[in-house]
Image (tube, rainbow, N blue to C red; front, side, top):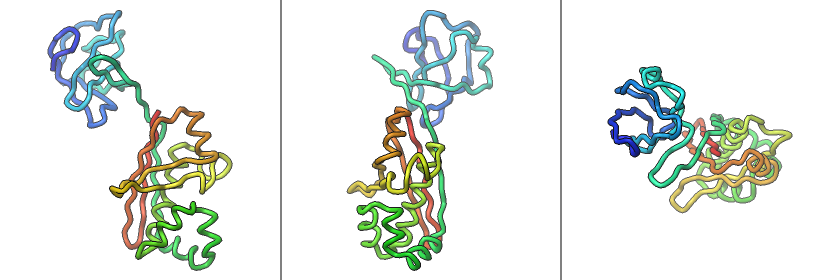
Length: 202
């Protein structure tokens, strides 16, 4: 593919999110020191090849792309953390049976409680949200405790059914401190297990 600035031909392999790029065909030579080149890829333009490296040095190696280039400007993005958690539905059902409202109000927000108890199998949905809270705390690298509490992490749903996060208290403060720009969450559950994955970006 042609470079936007110099029109030289490149072939670039990149993943869907353009978090890394690899050159499968290259032209020997040194990138100009004075300017950054923009490589137009299949999904996004990947910017950021270090000008101090020759293209031959990059052969058969993956290089991190710290930013994305687009015609007319660039925007930076980095992944702050990824968190995954899986919970046994039976474990949550046991807590609901034993502690009832006390357990629900300690861990879940009013909105989460209202949503879960409206479903045919509440324990599965409680388990998914429990996993989501754990996944968020793992993405931040703090765990649940001093930095953030259970109810600081609130899982909502759009009309389309897509879940999204609303952070309060300690979780909100941590997000601001680390300049978090977005958080992505995916939930899934079966009869016996619930799983959540969270990616936070800056």
